[in-house]
Image 1 (cartoon, protein in one colour):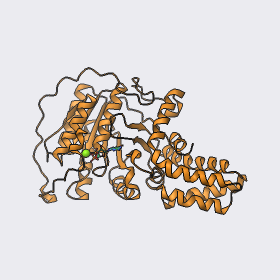
Image 2 (cartoon, protein in one colour):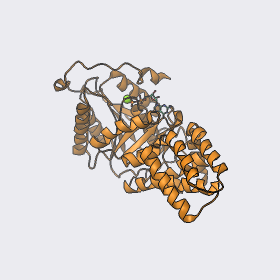
Image 3 (cartoon, helix red, strand yellow):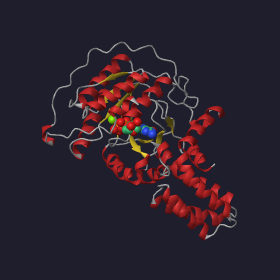
Image 4 (cartoon, protein in one colour):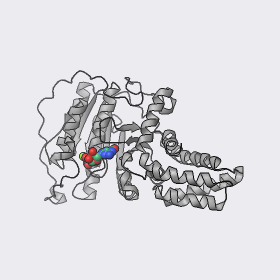
Length: 377
Ligand SMILES: Nc1nc2c(ncn2[C@@H]2O[C@H](COP(=O)(O)OP(=O)(O)O)[C@@H](O)[C@H]2O)c(=O)[nH]1
Ligand SMILES: [Mg+2]
């Protein structure tokens, strides 16, 4: 794939400047942007979301027409194939052997939950709740046990989603919406920025991309490729330029053109962790000054294949970057999709989108019911 040329496998450019010597090169304004192209028809179907949906409160995924949900469900099911292969089959074998739910049944679920990366704390919580409920309601067969497990897992995801009020799909504000993508290098920020640009465009929204990862030239080029693919414009600066200045230009251009959603791709790595957090803070300040309520969403992009390690890194961002939701990428490439539950309990944040491949349409608005059903049905 063309953009792999620019992907994370490129050797990052090692910084030569000390943190005090941040590059202060003023951004080079790009040549005047061409008039936005006429909106292209939808290139793909996002489970029935290809119709323009500019209304701020679209119904939740689960309330959509059965056909739409079906296609969403199928795609989710396909994406979690690898997780299903281990998790679901192991659960199925416990369920098949269960006539009466006792301590040993509950105990046999433990390694299965742990191996899908649900995490020790979450596993303990799930098993304890399951034990209580199983005994209280006096369930007997394996089918009932599976049902209870499903309810328990959904409950964990739903309680987080409800608490954080991030109803899905995320409602867009009436005016200009600014979405910042943050996260460690290689997790999929640039790819997701491109996919979201295409998704929102297919819904009839006008989108602009901002290349605020000025740390590597390749990152800017990679976002340009995505902008071309999704038919949206991009505001960028040169490598080493000030990301906040690029964001300033992007906010100004968005307002002038009546853009509905500005997606900001940021760097996952600077000289030091505190540099990175300062940079994100500065960008947030710039957005706040120019656009009321911005950034409306700060999405932390996490790579599902990094499992529990990814969680440790994610915590740094949630502490410093006021993250509003998670995009979990590479769900297609892992057998450890249980990380969704660890994210919910550890970070207290909902997964709002799942990345399920490298192509433009490989992004799904995350729906916890569909996710758990696709794992256990
Ligand atoms: N299989 C798969 N690969 C992905 C997904 N999202 C991103 N990638 C790949 O992960 C690599 C790093 O992505 P990139 O967007 O450059 O990460 P960034 O450094 O955070 O901007 C690229 O090779 C992407 O194609 C996904 O959902 N599934
Ligand atoms: Mg990137």
